[in-house]
Length: 295
Image 1 (tube, rainbow, N blue to C red):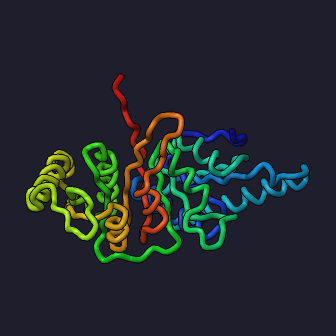
Image 2 (image 1 turned 90 degrees about the horizontal axis):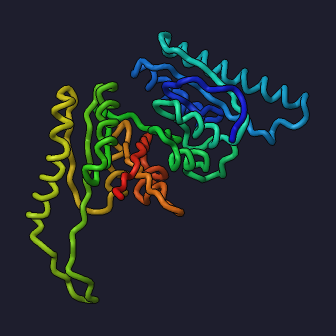
């Protein structure tokens, strides 16, 4: 449990530590807050072990406040109408951000901050926040390429991913872009026989039509609620991770749903989410979706 300044109701929350990853998160989060006309809140976690003796602790706290004030000034200079608040909170970074996520609309973090291992694509703090946050979180990678046509890609498995699509639609509306839902399915084979080509279980054209129909049924109500946003779906075969990582090279944001399983050892992030967090070419938004169970 972290200790420190009480955090008020938040808008877009940026985990900031002065690192290059923190700077990228700051730039993305400030722009997102300005576009959404919501406050920006910068939070810096001060590890308790770094405080040491009283005199040193005061120096550490003063340095954290100075970094936050400078970051707030830069954000306000870039977006003059943006309301910017800051907090420094003592405790482990992931714990601080997860506690704050209960009051935030969105969390933005860099892929790695201070203390990351060289060559590591995603830091432990970012990964833990993605696995446990109760609000959407955006992870901003080290390098982001400019794209010609603003677009938000969203992975869609079935109707349960509707909240992720709606998040993508709202983001696309704010940047004046389109939404690209990507649905990936696998050809079902009759079995594996070494040296023998196994037959397909069903006609491929019928399979394509079935998946197209399922996606259309899901997207039509969303299109009706958002007539001002272009939604162009892609239905393809293969593995979801490979398809989404490939499309991310031409996107402003990639959105994936994180289905929150329950139980003694729940998988908080599936293999597809893990893969895109490590390898996507654009920022990745993880939208938590609780799994409802019937007694």
